[in-house]
Length: 432
Image 1 (cartoon, one colour):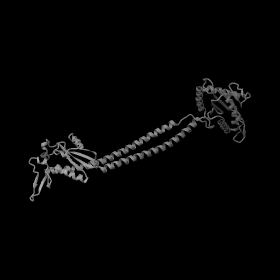
Image 2 (tube, rainbow, N blue to C red):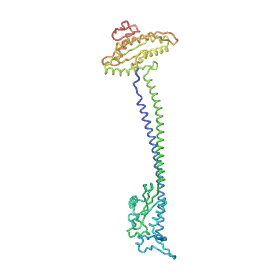
Image 3 (cartoon, one colour):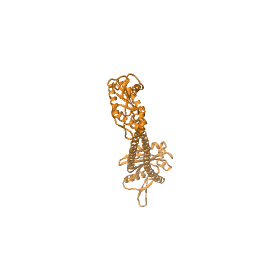
Image 4 (spheres, rainbow, N blue to C red):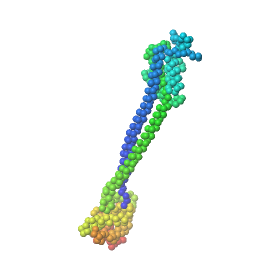
C-alpha cells in the first residue's frame, strides 16, 4: 500500500513559528534589559565625569571670585616678568608695589591667575581649564570650536555644555559653564559694554578620560558578550524544546492518522481512507488514460466460522487474510477493509487480463493456506472475488458497484471463484 497522503509539516511549522516567536520575544526582553543596563552604566560613568568637571569648575569659580573680590593678587616680580599690558590700560589701577626691603610685587588679575593654575594642573596631567569669551581682551584666550559653540548656547540661556573629544594624549571630557558679569568685573571689563548679570564668557574644563572610556569600552564588550551568550543559551534551549516537542507532536499525529485511516484489527486501510485514495486514483487514471482495476473479496461462510469457532477465530482469519493481501499485492496497490469480512483492492495501471491472473492466484493462495482455530484445529477458508476495470467517466461508487455485482455473481455461482461483470476466458470453469 502507498503511504498515507497526509503531511504533518503544517503542524510542525506552526509549532516552529510559535517557538520562534516566543524566542524572539524572550530575546527582545533580554536585549531590552541589557540595553537598559548598558545605557544606565554609560550614563553613570558619564555622570562621574560631569560631576568631576563641575567640581573643578566650582573650585575655579570660587578661586576667581576670591581674586576678583580682592582685585587680584600681588606676587613677587622676578627677572623677565612683565605686567599684563591689559592691566596697564585700566585707569587708576596700581599694578606694582614695593615692600620696605625693596622687593617689587606685580599684580596678577583673576584671568592670569586662573590661566597659570590651569597650566600647572595640565602639566601634572590632572585637568586643564581656561577662561574664554566671545568678546576678548587677550587674544591668547580665543575660544576653540567647542568653547565657541558653548558660549553661543550660553547666550541663549544654556547653563552648561559637555562632550567627549580626542585630545593630543587620548580621549578627553570637555565641560563648560558660563561666567556672569559681577560688580567687581566692571573695573576691567566695563568699557566692553557689559552690565551686571551679562554672560561675560565661560570656564572650559578639560578632564583626561582614558580610564572612563576604557571602562565604557569594557562595559560594552561585557554586555555584548553577555547578550550573545544569553541569546545562544535561549536559542539552544528553544531548539532542544522544539525538537522534542515536534518529535512528540509528529508521533502523536502519526498515531492519530493511523487511528483515523487504518483498520485496527487487520492493519489495512479503513473504508473511508480506501475510498479517498481510490477517488484520487480514478481522477489520475482519467487524466492519464492509464488502466485502473478494482477487486472485491468476501470470505465464504464467515458467519459459520464465527458461530462454530468463535469470534476470536474469526478475527484471526481476517488478520491472516489481510496479511496474504499485503504479500500478494504491490506496494502501489490500495487495499482496505470494506466491511465485516469484505475487502476492497484498487490496482492502478493494471489491465483486466492481469487482474484476472492476480485474482485467481489470490483465491488459490487463500484456499491452500492452512488456517487454524483458537484451539489449534485446521480450518478450510475460501474467498469469492469480484473484479472490474474502470472506463469512461463513471464515479467511484459506480466503479465499486460493478465489482460488488461481480462479487455477488461469484457467491451465487457457488463461491470460491473469481467473477467479472462479463464472461472472461482464462478461467471458464470458475468465471461465468
